[in-house]
Length: 292
Image (cartoon, rainbow, N blue to C red; front, side):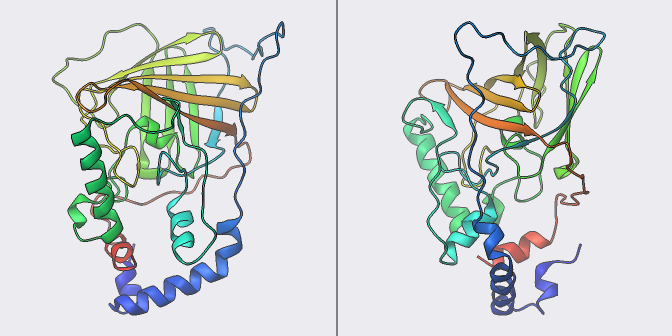
């Protein structure tokens, strides 16, 4: 993939002018936002949705799913990178509900040192003065499951008798969640998406995730966790077309208490997958930094 610098003759000012021109063409679609939809509430006495079952007993939830309110730019004000850029070009201010549902103030309960580090990492993105500190996923490195659940591009769920598989076109990422009760791998082994073990509780897939390497970030603006983090993810399938993804993150080395974020997902039956060729060392990132 050619870099943006090459496409604009190596001139940052030329790049910016061309970028603004493209944004003006697509401005209506950038500002047209899909309102978040909460999962359907169960009325007292109402029966829980009963999905079809696979031969091994799992609820049949295979297919393509995507976030209703997509974007991993910020946890406290969800938006895509395009939303943020359009706002910087003079578009209307964006203010959306925080993804964080516990604590009630909608903020990540960082320890003081961690809050300072998150601000430092956000500043690195804002001013593009320290490219090596830019968000790992913006540099085309794979991220962790909560971040991937927020992407603008949907993901696919594939079910096997003893596992659930998640596949993203972004970063060519995939995740296999065993359901057979096997123990976690040795604590010394650290992985980008961690080591996942799952089980079903009615219509909820519960995933216990350990062994993260602490390098993946939760947002573009520098939200992070450490390799000591323990994630409890709950994917609740409310009806045939609605799923709620929640994860509780427990990491005493970074946060003052466990906290929970939520993303509502909808089935995307008509979505057509296209390859995302973003990869480590992708040179278009250089052009993105020049455009800031």
